[in-house]
Length: 226
Image 1 (cartoon, rainbow, N blue to C red):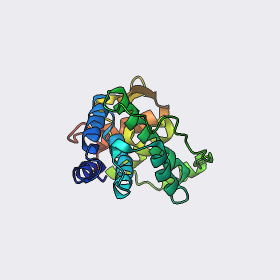
Image 2 (cartoon, helix red, strand yellow):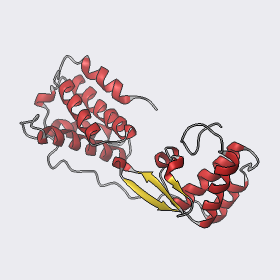
Image 3 (cartoon, rainbow, N blue to C red):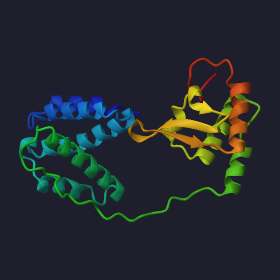
Image 4 (cartoon, helix red, strand yellow):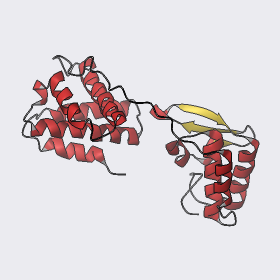
């Protein structure tokens, strides 16, 4: 994963216009870390802030002088080139950024994101796999190898427990309670929750842990290699 946070730091360090970007970015990142946001989330924030910062710098607009109209003009350049969901995602980050600065007393001017409206995006239902398609996918996995059975376990957990990708790849052995049929995952904002598993998934996970993962170093439950 590209480190957009480092790129953002490097970007604002070299600004000729908007020199206070550095102060604001460092303060915002500190606030995000205090809230214990996941590194992936922080990286996304940094990427989206970088787009806005670069555009303002190119236009010669100091962050101290940025207005709601400036941000709207930037967002207008995105329409038709990226999805409505992407535009709305950037609006959310810019709101959080300026709201944080305002709450911390670092921004005493008019908040340029105040009442900044989201784009009315078309809601699309994401296609899902049917049980038959999932069954066909499971049949293609070689259960006689470590990688094959590990992948089977991953698919079963995805399908049955409905966990997110980040939650699954960071799952630890200590987070599994086979007797209770539960796994402990940490979602957005590091919020902890317990997710139940069905009998087939419990059986698959039990066999995987005892037959294939037994003796593997580390606490990650689904390592890339044994």
